[in-house]
Image (tube, rainbow, N blue to C red; front, top):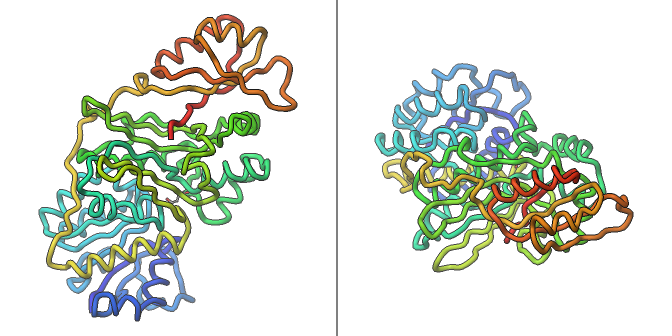
Length: 411
Ligand code: HSE
């Protein structure tokens, strides 16, 4: 029997407890012993839970229990998760977490402690919910040099955008629905401002390129400025708007990493990933494109990935799984102003297209029904983002108001 503890009994934590209870036989068959939930840490009371006798409000009951070999952290946030996880690892316990904020902020340090203590620190559920991505990248694709990773990494924003695209639903109504369905973060700003997707692409970039990428180094835009008009123009351009997290290896070995809404061509594999589903494309130099698809949020999909890590820890109580990257200094990341992309622009004013052509050269005009007379949408050719912002500033000086600008995803 392997004793485990679960810290947190929210959406994911209760899912982990549920799977460990309802799938007992299946899990027993996988490792040849019982996985026993000995303690559940939560400040709230759960008198109706079938595991009501295992609850504690005291972390000491976990850290001081030598029988507990694997600890699941599903509290979310950094406090007290960071402190608790560090102490568990230092005590030689393996830790499994779904906490992308924790891994993105402290992954390199926690992996180093795990290595030191010959323990495991696993976080499959931190990216892509129920989709296997960390383990496949770390094991199955390990022979590849990764050229690019691009993904829809946040279920809440993808749900909102899908509702806007398919049902013409307003942003706020779609967000409320995502919250009711349990996809959104406690503070949904982390979803809609792009921070959650940023943490996830940072984790994937750290894993792919071997050096920690901290979220504060990554240019991040959310979806709060996307309007139904932009959605309609994108449709007229045979595209859909998706929040994309992307990292690309450049010829000089540096990386171009960004989180931003993008117009994704309908023919792209990422264009048809809808609702709370996530999709992640990994381009390896040997494999070419490999695409991972599945539910990126929600109780049981995420808990499924956590439990898989628990099982892996139980199978490797005495050996470390090789999952590691070193700390980074950000010098391998290019400034976002140098990142090259074609851009969609929606603007208001007189003679917009001729003024835009003077600045940008040829532009592709997009037309849709029922647009105001003084509004135009167009796409400009690829250029560094800094050059684009200079030119849009010049366009505004020429009396044109830029209502929105969105990158064209080369995906
Ligand atoms: N809020 C996150 C999402 C949960 O919507 O994707 C899963 O990480």
